[in-house]
Amino acid sequence: MVKNDKKNGTGQSDISRTIYLDRQDAIKALHQKPRRLRDLAGEFAGRGETDLAKELEDLADEIERINRVLAK
Image (cartoon, rainbow, N blue to C red):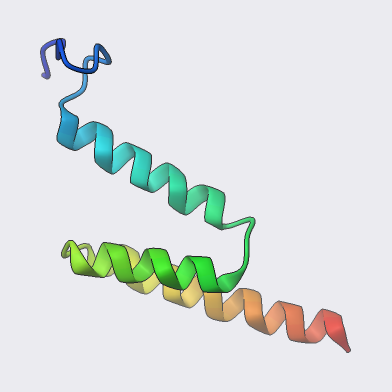
């Protein structure tokens, strides 16, 4: 259990708050271009979260496939 952090007042440590915000960025990117998903995948891979990075790459590929079908 995380005690209230006086620095950010959220009750989360700075590290968990950062991860939460980064995951929120990933969710927002779902509604953006696949390039943004690939950028986020690279960021997560650099932090060692390779499973999440792979999922984001796969999602970007799927969005590109859907966009190609819709463009026909």
